[in-house]
Amino acid sequence: MSANVPSGPRKGYCICVDFFFQGAQPVVSGGDDKYIVFETEAEAQREIADNMITRLQEFLDGERDYADAITVDEFVVPVTVNPDGTLSDENGNTFRGQVN
Image 1 (cartoon, rainbow, N blue to C red):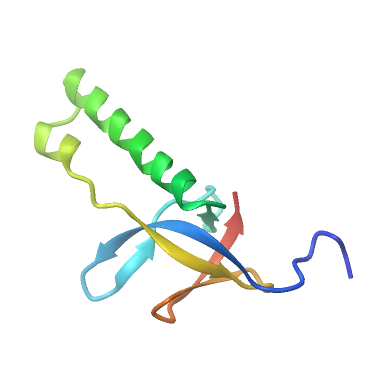
Image 2: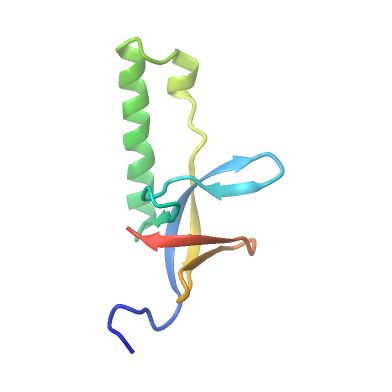
């Protein structure tokens, strides 16, 4: 067995948005259609906060309207990272993922 292959499931966190009829869906990806899994809840929360700061700065720069700048739709969801690369949330939803 390779040292790079996880031997079992482990816990992580994804940033999600609640979509109508689909429920919570991961939204932060590494650009290759795989969702980023954060090691800690605080790390995922910091990513959301950083995006909020960017949106607020865009408002101050006149690039975004106020309502859009202050609205936060993202939230953190605990997930299980399975050995096959899939992610599972507590509701049984499964997604493809990668470790950040």
